[in-house]
Image (cartoon, rainbow, N blue to C red):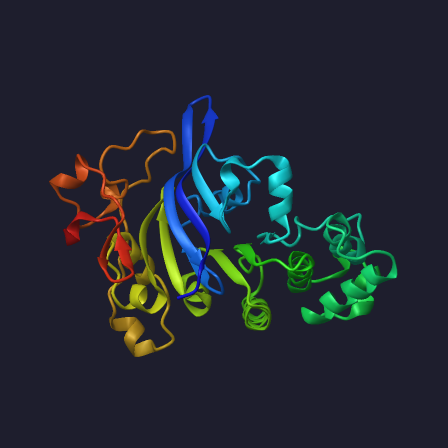
Length: 317
């Protein structure tokens, strides 16, 4: 069993608004082991990206703890955070917005190298060239600007920037959702190759369950800011315990026309609660086809029902 690299305990990220408090992340807990890829999935607006930003302290958590190599990032000072930044990096969702259009590729990738004193002078450009080649780009591209690249190439530049400081953990915030399907496969394969070569760990955030299934060792399913199921990848797809997970998996296309036409598609009815509402009972009950009386008065907690397979649902009590 690999050692635990990241442990999140009761992480909360709330945003006060004129209409009330938005509970974007509402007390999530999980562990991520060294060398592992943990997928974090759920529909848009469930809090996946906010969770990643809270872990990296790009937004300040409202509550909870984030243990990274024994250090609590949620309560760390700026000086303590800086010491951790080198080991914890992030790849952002939109490659068109995450790269400064006024900077060359050399300056974009070299910025963290210079900030952390990894290299100086001519050695910086040499290191940038090596990073570009590692992500499948020509080292002579370092004089170009972001607008001269396609979306897939820009995302490779974002990957090179994250690799520049030799991190142990990379938070991948929907790194392929803005790319064409053929380019998605290239970027996913690149991330897998880098993990095998460098021993990286990933928190891979996506709403695309087919991509997450391909890359993840374990998968956590989020709904309205909470984790409702957590299991090894194969186990989750074979035996989902939560009705929300079942509905998500029923929407994943299967590349077999006979199987695809025969299987049941679960269409969720009802509306999502307002993000500022105080939810009593199970947050999924208004849309759940299997809800019963207990779901309206008691909130289910994440429990282990099978070895390594946790769910927040009363159906299995």
